[in-house]
Image 1 (cartoon, helix red, strand yellow):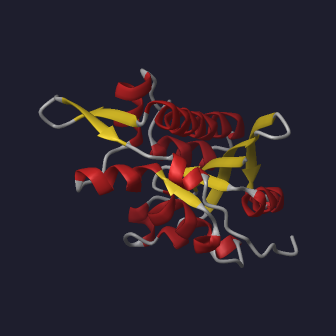
Image 2 (cartoon, rainbow, N blue to C red):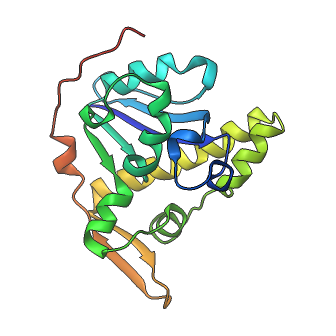
Length: 194
């Protein structure tokens, strides 16, 4: 199986574009983790705006695309850069899976902290600052840390069938997850000319 885990960082915040319009934010970097279980290959890579083409190829080759808030945020943010249809990709949005059980959204940091004992390295607004200050190494490191956390949550969920977080009353909540069903779903994807 070819697994792709990714996250995007943007150039602007929502208050700069007049509301929740992910497609207007601009993408500064795409962080990704790719694992080819058959070929025994894995790597973390950051893609800047001037070089998204290799990411599109990975996206189109993946048997499963994993993210956290991918459906409502990452895919719409990438739409101005990609001519294809993101709904064609076999995707697992961990936040959506948790929301199905809970009836509300939970943040990546809250789930990572209680499930893995690890956290994000900062806040999304930090990434926007890094972009505007031209601090590409810090930006890539921040983004790839989010990718690593998401990948570790996915692997933990596959193995243990649960993820954890603390609710607003500080109670530890265990949420059952079944990521195996997504692993077994294969969709044929029309590739681009990139």
